[in-house]
Image (cartoon, rainbow, N blue to C red; front, side, top):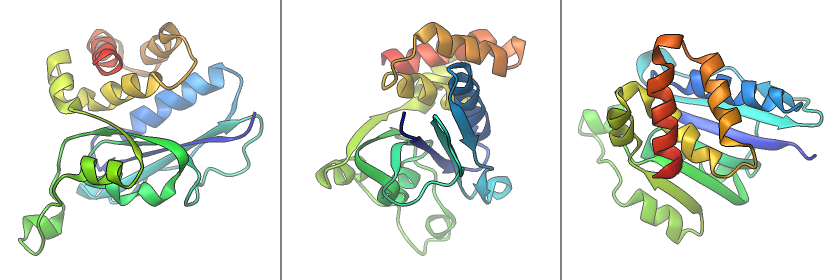
Length: 190
């Protein structure tokens, strides 16, 4: 199988590390060679972060270049727009509609761009956008946005739902498993 590429982008502290761990665990279970990059960016300062997950028969590098991402999974709308040049033709952006103001917006030097989902779609990109924050809250924790996004991403894979859920059971502390399973279902079925 050819190598597939998933970029996970967001703002520090949103749970991209658990999302990439979950994906890596699931894909290894299916016998793929998997490379997961370290989180790049100002993750401890609330800045932009990106993690690469690459899988296939043999993967030589964890890095994804422009135009290679099959999926961009974004925790925040502006981050989805920021990384679009990495999406390959026919790729999909799965994004939370949450907006987290970057420092230039906070200081008043810039304004947060409007209508980003519409602008990305007008540019010919396939965008699957949903309010993951609201769904995470419905599941029981605002911190479950990452698992809501994984539930949504799962719709694009020919991997049984139960296998995704088993990876959640194995990657999430036991006391949070049920809440995360609910978050996964909400993301997948919304």
